[in-house]
Image 1 (cartoon, rainbow, N blue to C red):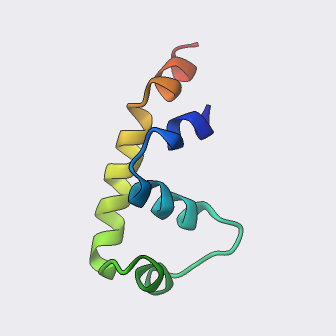
Image 2 (image 1 turned 30 degrees about the vertical axis):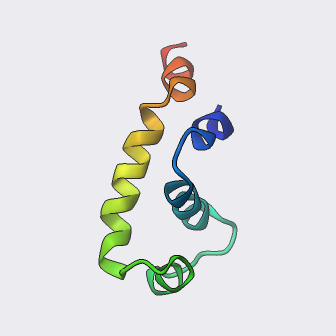
Length: 65
């Protein structure tokens, strides 16, 4: 379900969530460098990405079960 939901996200949002949820705990500074994204944009982008993930058909269907 999560893979299907993540596949429905735009690549930048999918990459951000992947880095945040990866085995290695990365700091926002490291994520900023990897994604060429301002540190101050990571939190708001994460929130929008998670909202979009929750709104995908795969996740909505899973939650409804």
